[in-house]
Image 1: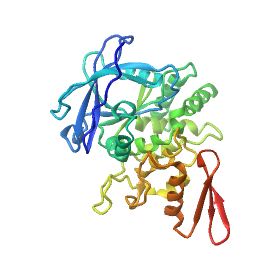
Image 2: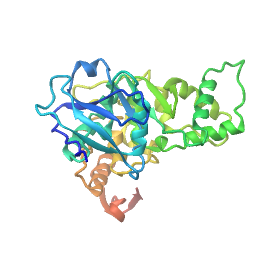
Image 3: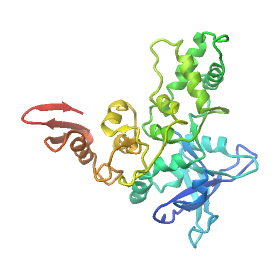
Image 4: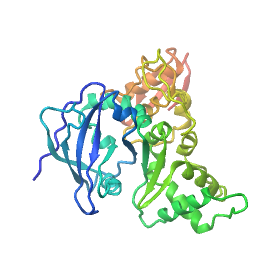
Length: 348
């Protein structure tokens, strides 16, 4: 039995990239090589990799992929490592779809390129994820395999809607509306991290099973199709996808971090409070890369050693000032009680 892939320590200001090796057979095992890439580097500045946006999915029924070190850039470890890495079924299915038949494909995928067992590394990598997605040549949105709910047909309908003109516009049929709703109810649209991944993207390719559609057409088609669907609002990610090609990214000299600068953090928390995360701390960490303003000294930067209750206290102090006292209680301290001058202000 193959041993587990041993991650080497990642140097400061570096990321890993996956070189996905080709195969002509869908059933062939997944093989890849890990590239250690310092920041900045030409491979990043030139956008020679793609970043995957997806949902990890259920940990049940995991699959194995085969990895080994590749010192392609001359900055890797002196001792190459190899082994297997366990990934979720959803990610494994994405890798099968992403794998080319004859050429390598260079990707950034969080579950593979970040050593999830190393909290210090996770903190460092999460802090630069907005930059990682913004530097990628393209963000690949993986909605999952076709599961018989008509999702692939929905993508065909979305593309047709995107190509409509005022003279050729037709009302979306009931069956197509149901397929569209099923597609938009997939877990990807509820995940909090996708907000940053979409907002940072240079360009987007949406994938569902064997179907693909560019992000601009996806946005146009979904918006047009939903006009015929009563009481169905566009997912939160659609608003960010709309501005993908117009948004400017900058790193203010006094801010010390890569900033998308979309809105102040309190506004983002209010707008996207219903987004989901397996780890409740991610409902804050995932929005830091979107936020404007100086957050470096806020105590809110990604730190997975920080207890949820302490994070909530820091968040409340940041949003409301130090005149409040904050008490956290309940299961995993997910209830915060805010007190001002003798009055309970609310429950979050």
